[in-house]
Amino acid sequence: MNPVYEALPVFAQNVANSVAGYWVARTRFSEEFDRTLAAWESSVSGPLLHLRAEQRERLDHIVRHAREHVPFYRGVPPPSQKYDPDEAISTTLASIRPLDKAVYRERWREFLAANVPAHRRVRVSTSGTTGTALRLFATPERIAESFAGVWRQRRAFGANVEDPNLTFNGRMIVPFRQQRPPFWRRNAYAGQTLFSVYHMSPANMPAYVDAVHDTPARYAQGYPSALHLVARAMLAAGRPLPKGRLVAVFTSSESLLEFQRDVIEEAFGAPVRDHYACSELAVSMGACAQGRLHVDMEYCIVEVEPIEETEQWVRGPLLVTGLGNEALPFLRYRIGDVGTRAKTPCPCGRPGDSFLAIEGRIEDYVATPDGRLIGRLDHVFKQQTSVAEAQIVQDRPDRIRVFAVPSRDWHEASERALIQEIRKRLGDEIEIAVECVDAIPREPNGKFRAVKSYLGNLGSGRTLM
Image (cartoon, rainbow, N blue to C red):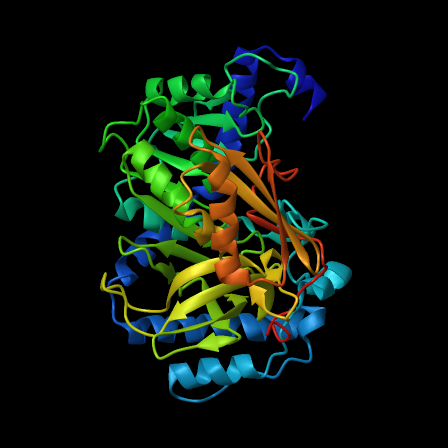
């Protein structure tokens, strides 16, 4: 945190956040944003053939641009000339070697487009949850475009850019030394009440509950883990929000776990709608009312490297290709997340690619002694009402440690029930140690990881078996 900001009184910090909000809004909500949002809101109900044709056109453009102006991609073959858009897209992508994150981290300068001058490049922040933060850049137009996908989803559920909102993300807006409320600050320009996720101790949660009730808002947004903490406190105090007061709760930046969704929806009296994107500006998906994550096909292409497949879906590590960021193109980028893509149309009627789930990073899997990699272990806690929050940590190939925050219902049999549920998924060969703790520590960026592995990279996509 900036020492000058930290020394300011609260009202001055609110002014500083409002000024910062003004400058951020100028970049995000430009004329390019308005044009893109209008076009994408029209295309969402259009025929799939038109979406594929636009996707193919944008892919051809970014590949030609990368071949000519981006040193790393100069050896990439030209786009396919096949007539059918689906065939052309598949053929073009198949000719490009997948890009691993480690390669980009070491050679990032080779990805900068030579025809985009330095003054046109905006540094894009990345939190570096699992390692060193990446150096990322984009033009202002592409940043605005990335928010068009976000707001196409939000407007579909009744939220608008100018609406007041409650925001729970990793911004450090309250000094660590502060011990009394308010643990939030105001961005008056954007109508935001920004809550600190670093002050959410049990002793402070009543103040958060009061603020959620006292602050006018049309929607809430932020990290699922932070919203879950507040929601849990609201329910414990018997103070859920009236249904309909908020139109929706929009989550992002972390895997949304089922038990978190249930608690948040009950406490905030509104549906939870997840959004999946990345700082590399190479992927964007928004959840519909049916819960599926729809790919913003005008913005990106998402492939799956299959590790498991049925007639209904295919699951595996994701390869993402951004279609807009000429300053720093990412083609077939192994983003490190695993997802399950549906093979059937979504019941909501929206055409195009959709995912049943994004299941988290490859590093967030438990490796069993018999060689299996197990993900989505949040289901273990869905029926464990005596566990308020939990984290699984694997520090040895033959052991996991489960850090559990007990609720008031915790009793002697709770630990046995928890271990039994885990054994159903991991088997009997792995040691399970349960430890009760007061709170689960967050990452330096304020994010929560339900599973943490210290065994190294468990796979790059091709080796995840």
